[in-house]
Amino acid sequence: MSRSHFFPMLRLSMRQLLLISAIDDSGSLKRASELIGMSQPRATKALQEAEDLAGTKLFDRTNRGLIPTIAGECMIRHAETMLSQLTAMAQEIHTASDGEWGRLRIGTIMGAVPYVTEIISSFLKRFPRTSIEILEDTSVELLRQLDRGLLDLVIGRSSMTKVPQLYTVTAFHDELLAVVANPAHPLIGRKRVRLKELSEARWIVYTASMPMRLSLEQEFRQAGLDMPRALLETRSALTTMSLMQAEPNTVALLSSDVAAFFVNFGMASILPMHLRSKSEPYEVITRRSVEQTPYTQAFIKDLVAGTTRRI
Image (cartoon, rainbow, N blue to C red; front, side, top):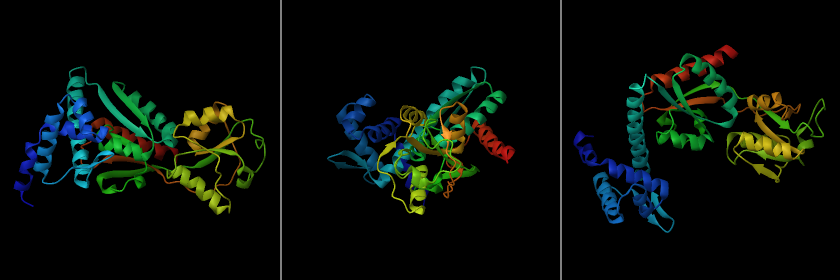
């Protein structure tokens, strides 16, 4: 494909990229124009010009608002990356003039939090002049934030994306699973607990289709049991523990690292159960198209080295 094919795209303005990103956030041209301080007629014209430059429609007009086309999703992803890089450039310029402060934005799934915070603690001893932002969420949402340029790296699972070719992925830590219960649960103190004994318990579970939830569903299938219907769904470890403290009959499937953390503080007990399911390992994920900062590279190196020290 000749370079002349890309020349029209060079005429895209920053305001048009901001508009496209704002439409993705709001789903409405009117709200998007308000977000970026542009009149609606001007926003309509700017979007039409962007579609003309792209040579294709970027959004479908529906009764649910503006829905991006496949080309629109591509445009949004690159627009948000470029806007994020401009923000990062401004921040780096500011920190460079302020004694070489660094910044690192980390996204992590719940199960990896104890391990990641341990690495952060040792990282800050070597790089004390570093500001670190941590976002905990599902792999799906974290990868979305990574695509938008709002995170430097994600600790999660690349299996949750349909476009793995966009990422550089390194598996670094196996996740073990444990069933935890309120310390006052009637089965605490038993030498062995079977899954069927917990079929009537109130399970606190992760969001549907997430790896931890799929592992629990697999455990019930392999035991020939129906998955309980009385569920409490949450993405938050803190909410899990709060619910568990409020109701003695609650149980949850957690990573062994998270389970050990709460057990150490007397907030939960691990039930002696044999689990057949093996969870996917944690992965550190970055965007292939984005050059990693020295701080990101150093943190990833610490993650991998930390796993090696544990073996």
